Length: 244
Image (cartoon, rainbow, N blue to C red; front, side, top):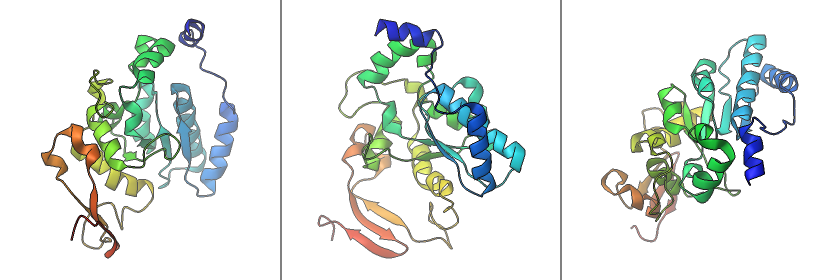
């Protein structure tokens, strides 16, 4: 571990599968074809290269309503934060990745060192920089499909039931912020914001009824929330046996 830590802290960030020029070329062609680019980027170098590729595509093809997005965003360099808003790139996050588990609090610190360790899962910083945020899962690979687990994680930066200190608590989101990212933000990321994501005249009647009011309970119990009723486009698609 100490050997790996020394290598990474000295600037070794791994080898990319494509050079920046290759990534730029592919991104420009796909953008020109009218496709939405969706990068999965873990480290700060990957995020930087993805933003560079999107910027290059825009310089060549011009700006359009592309809604390109970058997912995961485990590590973001401070210089790249304002580029999300500048380029119109959606920050697609998975809040439970930012919990106070052993990997984040111990192993990542050993690997990254204290300076870069503070740059992990910068949810608050992304919002304050003006980025559009969407929330998703990485299920079934790593994240739970239950959205209430992720909502709780965004608010606490802790694993459910944990007594350890929160992981970088200054990056917590508020309940209105994470709900907006889950609904309006995610609809926008999928070009559905004119028909879903919020309850408004002219939009589809897409909503759920919960067994508790999230604004009136402790954040630590949100993961226990259950859906009683689901309505999609005005039609009932689910009704719990616990709700009549």
